[in-house]
Image (cartoon, rainbow, N blue to C red; front, side):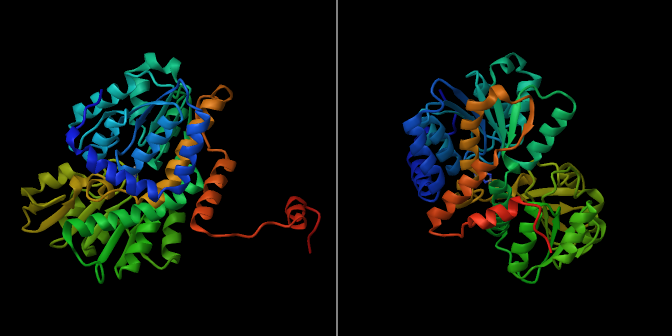
Length: 416
Ligand code: ADE
C-alpha cells in the first residue's frame, strides 16, 4: 500500500523512467545481473530519497535483485508525483508527494520503516536519525545503511563521534564516482536550470555569488563563469578560499558580496549563510537560491520578517517586498533549488551515484557481519567498476599499465 498524490499519473511516470533507463547504462547492467543473482532475496530495503525518475530506476534494480522496497521522499518539494504513482504500480511501497507537510513528511518516513528493513538508503540522514530517535526497536534488524549526500555524511560522522550510531553506514557520497560527478556537474547544472526556469534571467554579465567552495560550489562557479557571469565566492575554510582565488574567482566575506551580487547560490551545508543583515544590504531584484540539502542556508524566516508582502510571481519564484522598498526573489522556497525548481541531476549523472548505491547495498548484505557500527567507505574496486563500466558505455578506451609500470609503482628502490 502506498500514499501518493494521484495514482492516475503512473503512465507519465513510466515514460519518464523509460528516458532515465536509456541514459543509465551502468545501472541497467547491474539490474540485469541482480535479476539473475537475486542478492537481496528475502531482504527489505527502506529508501529515503528524492522521488525522481532516476530513483525509480534504482529502486526497480533493488526489487529485481529480490528486495522488498519501501520509499519515502527526502525533501518536501522534490517528489515527482508521476514517478511516485508509477513506482507504486510496480509494487514499491511509496509514501511521498510534492508539497508534503513537515508532519506528514515524518509520518511517511515512519511508514517506510514499518516494513522492518534490513538495509536503509538515506539522503540527508533523516531516516537513520528517525531510526535512532523514535524507532529504536527496529535497529536490531538492521544490517546497515547508506548515505547519499555530504550533509548526511556530516551528520552521521557526528553521530559516530558521539558513539550514537548503532550500525555500519556506507558513505556513498564520499566515493569518487559519486561526488566528483554528482556534486560537481549535477548540482551546478541543475541549480542554474532551476534559476533560469523560474526567472528566465540572463546569467551573462551578472554577478553570481557562490557560498561554499566544496565540490558543489566549484561546479557552480565554473558553470556560472561559462555562462558569462562574474563569479564571487564566499568561504570559511582558508584552503578552499585560496583554491577559489587561484581558480580566478573573487573571494570576499558575505557582508561585502551581499552588496554587489545579482544572484546568490548557497551550497555550504551550514545554516544562516545568508541572513537578515545580508538581505538588508542587497541590491534591488537580487535572486536567492539554495542548493544545500536543508532549507536553513538562506534564513527564510528572517527574510519574511523584513518583508511587508510575499507574492508568488510564477512557479517556484516568490517575490519578497522588503520594508526598505526593494524586492528580493527566492527560488523554490529556499529548498534545494535543483530538485524543487528543476528535475534534479540528469540521468547520466545519477547512473554513477545510483550504481554506487546499488553496489553498496549488495556489499552491505554480503559483508555487514564484518563491519562495525560507524561510517565506512565504499570499497575502491566497486568505485573503479562503476567508472570502467561507464567508460565502456560511452565507448571511451583508456591505457593499461605494463607489468614494468606496475612493478615500478609498487617499488621504492628506483629514484634519481
Ligand atoms: N539528487 C540530485 N539529483 C537527483 C535525482 N535526479 N534523483 C535522485 N536524487 C537526486
